Image 1 (cartoon, helix red, strand yellow):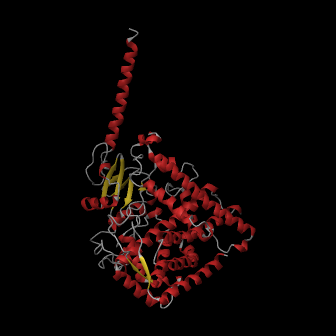
Image 2: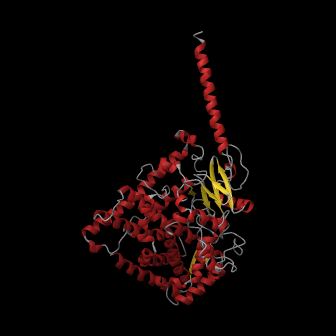
Length: 543
């Protein structure tokens, strides 16, 4: 009798475990089904939802297909998670603007929070939730990214644009390195007070490498869907390559943020030693000065400041760089568009490169920048928002935790609103400030919450670097278009979205190199003179 008791106990335990596992499995499977009142979408497989249908590369193209098939709002199941595609400006405005107080968080990301930014003070923009710290963090950016901040930076932006234009005299050799340097130079000095030219030659390349590695880690397929199947986080590192990759990215992020902080402290120390020797107020040294003087109720720690610096530079650089490269490719691929831009800049600027205070006169070139952001948006699906409570929108019900994506790719390709939406046609923004068909009246749209572009996101999480990126690209393009003909490289250009543009968090050309040819010897000389003039003004400004 005594020998049978352990067997009975084991049998009872096994039955109990089986019941619990069956219950958990049943609950999981039921969680992958569509909730009551959920928007229409493709059929699900119990246990997976729609995961098996979501492509690893360029998911926004599949999202576009589903929008055509299922309508303005599409409901998807990512395992037990709810994912909703918003395919019209009206729905984006309703969720992200009108209900922004409850729809402005970001989805939890296990890899970032537990393997990359593990210290609570490592408050990277990629994981910040919409809370008091986020609002304080975003407010600090206004010093350099507001309209007043950008106006203060115009002489520096013009100097770097003129310098980039000068570097293209050789035809555009080492193109990637040159445009990286240009895109980073002003954000760096505006954030830390350091001049990129005073730092090691590979500084910009290292920073861009770090950012590329972070974005690579975030790509679908780079790591298993740990947030969908949490059990995967327990896989040992020897079988989980992504854990090693995340540790590598963490090291890079710590180095970069530390460099921003060290550079800012160096500038602040110089201000303390000799205030007159530093003629330009930069973001981090300004915050340090205010905190030291007791002017701030809530203080940033050193680690927090380091990541404020990283976010400020990142917000200004990523979209700026990608947009400029896409614009140059568009000009090379559309000579008729470049000819119109040449005509405008020659008429407005005359015999000298245009100065920064007159770029507002370049209406066609501005339309070209807007069109490239519509045609090849840097963030085709924008960044996701998470609902912090249950909400009902019209006939649909969304449980707390539902993830919403403003489907910029589809919004920018509505055939009822845009004439030939797949074509690059800058004139659409001259005919209508929203780029729409003339039948859509701009004065009616302005009060509807509609945006001209959805590339930079919407609502309270809209990219704070939007105006900085637009101004930087417009200034640089004005210099380059005045001076150069822009043509495809010998092997030609691939501008198709399927093969000619990279997949990732930020979309840009796979091969961005184009050929720059001075339009005349007089313009070549004008480029050199302009670079010298603006450099002198910038140095006087910086001190």
